[in-house]
Image (cartoon, rainbow, N blue to C red; front, side, top):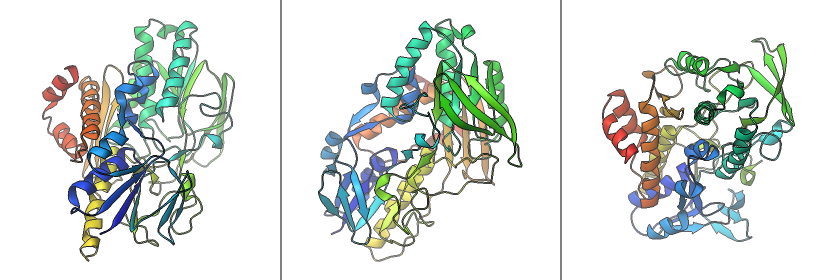
Length: 430
């Protein structure tokens, strides 16, 4: 029987382990390697940052749930991967051998690529729950001493949804606290236009998000290259299409949350043939590494080229729908290989996003995620906020119970067919 290791236990890795356990015959050994023993529902981090959630409400004890599912779990994390010898070295010094490896590490956060960026510098983050807790402390201080806010993303960023979400959630929280009138807000993004999202827009995300920013009195700077951050001041260049600098900005702030660019994790850095120059895992259409044929990659850690060149670099997001599809395809392909067949399953790479504004939101569905598309739809309304709450409750239940059934595809069908929205609203308010 085979030894299968899943490296990483975020959204993709956790569901990957459950899917393999569900589909593989008894006798195969499944091991999950992760740094730490907790799963946190990252989409809820913006709510943590304004005090609408507590960390324990969005956290799952992976050791307990994996034990219940009879999945081996190592929480030391990986120090390095030796694909030539099918071996992982753990941070504690032990090694684990594998027959098949699925890399689902998520990204490393490249705050260091901009001087002064990140929780160790002068801006905040919602990429991790600990970061969001730090941001919550600064948000409380902001309520006591209101001042300018800058929200956005650094050059090379690929995950823009949380930046828009957090800008609008902050606006809602500040209005409820009756201090919004004393807090000028600016959205700073490398996207060539508002609502690009690394996807060249989905439906009318440009119009919807521009309208929402205007409605809430949030100014914006696009094609922005943040060059450095100092205490209370951000420096950014607005870049023309030809790469020349259109304007220089020195933006004061009392509070800032900026998403960083991503890169691959240190354990894989520099492994020739496994990762690209930024450390992202190289895969073919079957999620399989072209050089190391017993290694697969899923989720944010995989290499996907940008849709098109932009004045300031932006990446392509790996959304939950896409990751869920990668999980299903990878499980089916490993099963095929174990039966002596060739991999055949291909991920659909569709996208669905519920961008919460705290009291309403914007939803979009892209099928496929990269244009041209068969479905290119977006909509704004109060129902999105309710749906996001329902999504949070369901997904955490799914992780706690060790379930791997698809969710994003069903949600996309429900939204596009305007089905079950009443049920989602009911679940969200219970």
